[in-house]
Length: 221
Image: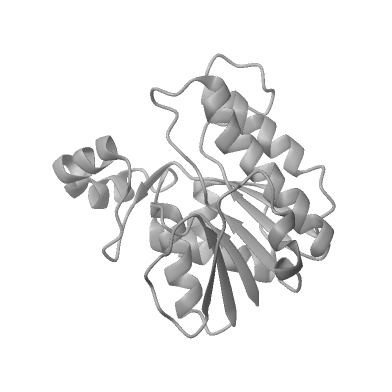
């Protein structure tokens, strides 16, 4: 299996990258990002690309892949809706539309979030924007589109988040993740399980196009 990965420098993306590099069924990983990962591996190739609204300059290099794991995202905290929409919607659809032209047999996995608003009319800005993103991804002519909606994610294997507030919260309350996973197993997952679940969804499908946290755990554990 050959995978294109967006957002490999983030917490979710790093988890997905780790599991892809460990999985013998994954033969190649192409990471597309704005800065080098500084991670050498025989399976891994990187393309540094600055404009995530236009991929025509590298489109010819994106053919021949079986899956895309789109893990790119930002926190909506303190962001205006237009700025959040640019990263969450515009970047995602620009990449997906390009990949759909080059790889119609591709499985596209988008990491969304628990509570995403499929009606696009709710009060929460981030949920509306992600809902629109999900809805428009489902219109594209891929072999399959899976919308992963994790809840709380425990970072493992030395992985952390780039969001400063989350790093502080993890430092203060990270010890609560193991008991929380036991008490609320349907709503808490890990970067390791999430990465494995993405691979499993490509290999054998998922229960639904909307893959909630409990489905993620069932696939990846």
